[in-house]
Amino acid sequence: MPYSPPLWPVSVKGVAIDTRGRVLLLKNERQEWELPGGRLEIGNAETDQIPDPSCEAALVREIQEETGWEVKADRLLDTWVYEPIPARRVLIVTYGCVVLTPEREPSVSPEHKQVGLFAVSEVPGLTMPDGYKQSIATWYAHIAPVSGEHTEP
Image (cartoon, rainbow, N blue to C red; front, top):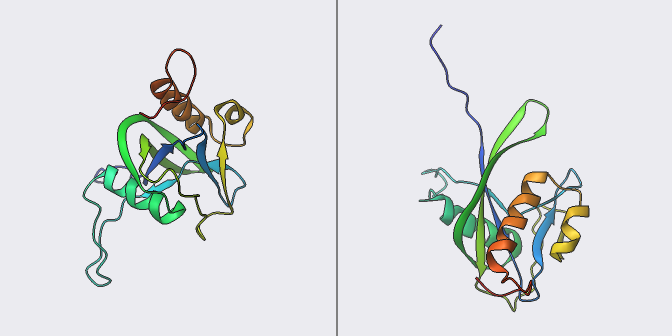
């Protein structure tokens, strides 16, 4: 039997922080908080769907679709494997983001149940995968000066 490599979905996620230093999270159908983002589009000629040229472009598109925020993907924070349900593994690729529309209130798309903005001190107590918590902590450590006050990246 010829070798067939495993195929895993890839999901790009973004840590986006508002002007008050709160991280943007979305509640999914499993009642977990998650970072905004989603899968890369491969394109479809029949529906005129354009393929995402990069992970960063997919992330920018996904965050705008899910929350109404416009962002710039700044830097790769982390990659990790998540198993949301048994035997279904997803490669998560997480970026730190610069919010380009900080005055805009985030909205919630039909893909999610709720949108929330949380202080970094609230994140450890939230129901969410540890990989997201680690990515959030990494981005906060990058953007916060030694004094602990929030600054824009």
